[in-house]
Image (tube, rainbow, N blue to C red):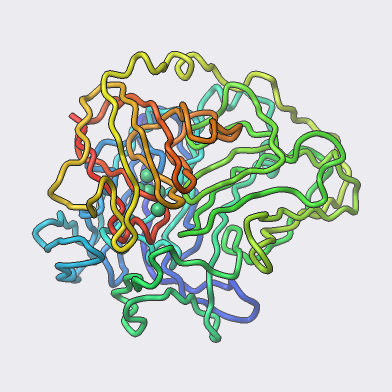
Length: 457
Ligand code: C2O
Ligand code: CU
Ligand code: CU
């Protein structure tokens, strides 16, 4: 560490995890664990992460939600190949054409530089390898990266052991307790692309929170802050508490993808798609000591209808509260549609492969070329459900067919659209020129070509 930079090292490697009782499950994790280590940074302080790769497959690390220069953004062909390894010679995959010449390879490790000139926010890092993101995240390559700032630190929100990260995924296991990804060739662990039969995405029947199936958490009868991330490949969640609280909303939302809201918003149901984050406070003062409160998934059924359970086990005086003003809204309020100089249309359709504006992802094609510092409106249209994600910047959701939802507020980087919906986002492409991607965060859709190149400059 020097005065202005914090250094971290992460190694993508195989590991063994106790996920199911009495079984060691092989995973691919950062430092061999799933979720990977949580990185905590201060806003405006440079963080350098040296990503080593010891896996038999190339990796590319992406900081989701990061305001990051292009060469550190984990563009899908900026690959890390393990020392002594080779880049697999894949020319055709899921409607996309690529060749080894398209890759910029680092052997052994690559340094990612994150200036983090952005607000306090709950970010996450995950693999982003060209064509193979879904299996590599499925095997465990994901972790949290928190950014804090003075504004957030000054708030009386629940802290310490009452400020918890919840990474929710679904997974399927075989009879031996091993992760079962429906690969094109399951015998080749080193090259697992999804079978096109799974073009709607890979679902599992086991819900994991921070790598643990349907966990219990002992809580006091106080407020808790939960940073909820849906890191599933293809499962959308609709979260609620059962039984409902005696008083007030199930969740008090204090932040979204890009950081704190201006003001808290109460919700009784939170729909959270893949890649989205909801920063919420749950007030267990609305329950009795001895109560068991289940975090349920109203979009699931059977084993996927339950996420985890809170056991209200002790009485405590609550020191925290949720103030009516959380953050300075002036930047958010100042971004208005009349500032936009360009409107683009992005149509998410197809199926096999998945397409944006009628074409599968093409490494050599530029799909949008926003000028640096330009403010733009993007109209996004869908055929099916697609949680769309834009790199580099956070955006504002300004309209959607069924009307902007109460959960659409704040700075977003991932926008969950319903089938046959038109949604409008507003953003300014600031600070860093270069090539970024815009894609569906259903990871199977992404791997099956639902991605576009955004050349900022
Ligand atoms: Cu979370 Cu481009 O991804
Ligand atoms: Cu991202
Ligand atoms: Cu999609």
